[in-house]
Length: 191
Image 1 (cartoon, rainbow, N blue to C red):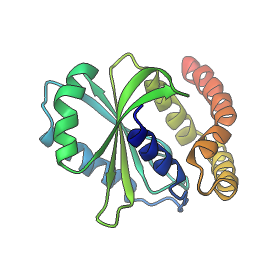
Image 2: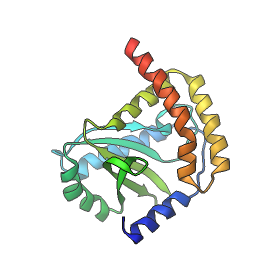
Image 3: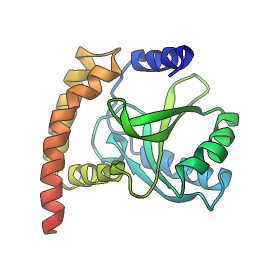
């Protein structure tokens, strides 16, 4: 990673974490961006687009950033074709590791509003990416509101403790997310 790219990453990590109560407009913000991406990007590259993360769980407080998981037919073509299109449209781009600077890597974009605030995180992966398992977490929290409430409490605590350290905030959620993922896999295997 070049020095300037590392500096950009450090700036992103230090951006303030601000949780808001659930906003019923978040699904609409997802839908509008999904339609925008489908109209902007080559259809042969884009497959499914899913809303995931906390803004996809009704009633869950969240950072007001809509997370989108986009299946692409090829990450190599994404780098060559999609990246220039989205960069020219004002999106920030990072070639990002899935976990702690370890492969596999994927294309990650940040969209901001005119005030410079993040509005969307777009994670572009191929169909066999382990990131698709995050939909189990989303679906489990949707099915079990009490579990979503536990997650909200943890996020509130972490956002106060690590208001300007997104890496520590994310790391603080890891053990809890892993425990819920185990339950989700067991639950959805039975259903």
